[in-house]
Image 1 (cartoon, one colour):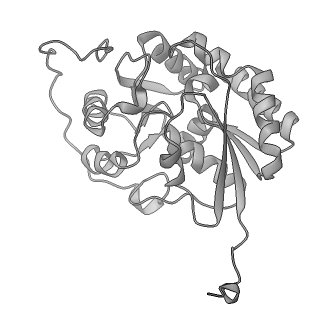
Image 2: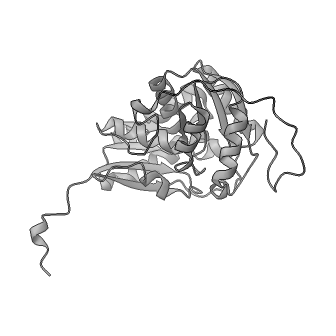
Length: 272
């Protein structure tokens, strides 16, 4: 069959993505991307360290970033995104900016990180008080809170799992339960951290239930990268992507949290 009459394939705009070696959610990133954009992914080299502040520092070293960005050069992306929350907040705001500068020097392309994109998204939503959900340990979660505080963002409630591996295996049910727990106090928005934590399908449900914008690490990364090339992320009923979805009636806050009952699953420290 002669298909030359179709005239395709159509030209694609490229977004380069640098992700840690253990990143397992390529499919989730693609779900926010419009048809005319392609993602070009590369991963940082493997290091035998569990998810921790030490790992965050290792996967965000400027030399490592530079090599990854140069590897993406052959695909000629229009923008480079570093898809890792902890790796981009571990050095504070100054560290995040230095990462963007290092990526730009290596690829001569506009660059964005997940943690930088988070602050952009909170500014877009006018959110200064947020509820926080993470799969991390207490120390990594507290480091994220310090980064947010440096940017003038107050965390009104938090929930974390204490995981050091297999984060991509966390089911939506656990993410939703943590979100409800973290959002017991008034907040302008809720942020679900970690690019390795599945969130796409749970965002609309939580926004409808909690009546506030719900943003996630993968969502803000793609949203900010696409902004830099003059196009928009796609996603149904997500407040960050659609201004008309940002208005909800006031909600009644639940009562005080109940004491946890029974033992937590393996690898979990609990919610704080």
